[in-house]
Length: 177
Image: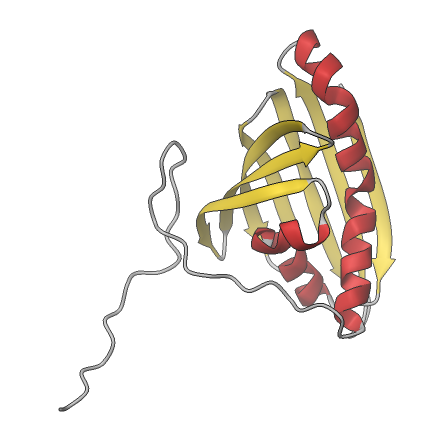
């Protein structure tokens, strides 16, 4: 039953760091083991997504339903994946207008010993290096070498994972001919 805890200080405001962590759509740009992402639903209070892991040809995935309390907390909860248990959080605290303290905590257990033997080393590497990758991304954003993640429209309903819609659809105003 591995537990991972990391705490770092970054030179990015808390709101920006929160957006970076919550912006799963951009993960393939800076997480080398991320083979893809699918967002099933998003609101200010919740993000439901699946992250595909592809590390040296070994593939797996993890889907979470994250409860958000911007800009300070992202609570991680397992929705799908090869785990018996996966829970944790990101805690982001402001340190003045230009910096923040970032804490990552994850507690997980695989669904079987066989899964742990096969995926344990891969997932262990992923979570052990995760915070460092976010620090590198924050540094690149601060230096103007990378942009903040864009959040495209996400459909309200997706297969296998109930979603929370972003907002009700509002028709555009009529334009006279």
